[in-house]
Image (cartoon, rainbow, N blue to C red):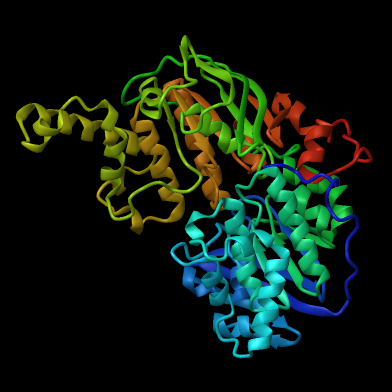
Length: 541
């Protein structure tokens, strides 16, 4: 997931009118009584690109949901303030009517209809439009922007690559000919070259007369193409101004890189481990490269995770962080280099063999069974440690019953450490999102790892949930003595936990060192904010 270089992108920003198209004033939003937005105000001028930045849980997606009218679908409510499109209120209007008024959202995660063809997906975006000439023009516009979709118009959308699916999601939104396009994390999970292509496409769409609200973790890309930017923090506007000014702002640098803002996780007390302390071993990544279709996702990446340490791997969207975790767990094969864990070489091993060496991970998107109880989900984490065979377990023989009772005891102890002791009988789907993320971490711990890989453990959490998760992870590390590799966008969270930080950009390692050193590295600043040499790192900042 990389920052966008100026090379290959259209230079400069399109001019836009000062006339307000969308005005959000003193907006208050809550989910089940928990405040998500607090007095937020935002103006989008006609023909402008406005970037909305901020860490996980800052309220960016909530803002888009409120504008598009989809907030009630997530059990959210607008408790105060106003949202107007050229003076007409959007609050309380049906989402379909908001689309008809010219406001269309592209949600995070490339939500296309996988069983439909490309052409059928686009036709769905034009639903409700009766004029044949207008639909033909919309098809022509989309196919001109994305020639690849023209080539694959008869193919099922599920068979497209991630980048092509993102093109289709944007193209489907454009079929409604929006005046205002709401884009939620369009670069998420894409290779750096595709991130640049998406950025160029957003600029083209804007030059064609469509205003854009762009929610992005990739601040470098967003600030490069936007006219104005707003940084949210815990549901409030922390900083706003022209995109060029914010790219040079020390305040934005501090908020995006956690400079001087490492999260205080409070006092951490180790507890008696349920399954004993573990003997962690050094993890060594040596010149690892990964290519997909000729594109380099990782380019000779090297790092060392010391036993019993917390090592963070950070970088913009598309930098290669999740690819690295997939190599460490055997999901992806390296095209070059090798990985060692203690005396064992991981390169070439299948995932079960790697898991058996004591390596466990969590995922950015929850990989749990919503219909199963918390206990049932955690027991799945004990599967590789089970000695009872399929027949023995199925017949409920005495040995299997004794083992199952012991597994339940261990699971209950881990749940207690994770603050889930009173939730074991609760179906996962009934839990709040933050608690479900804790279940995911608890399940990984049930496998008794000596090395724990955490992929975005606080993604989507609010500030209080993130702080509690940080305290839990620190307690787990101190209690078990395990090593942790942490991939995360929330820099305050990272800098409060990590002993060492490796920074990836465009698949390359651009920095490696202590949190303080990495926060002040000019290459890191450029990767995250697109800042040039004019940005100086001040001593004591």
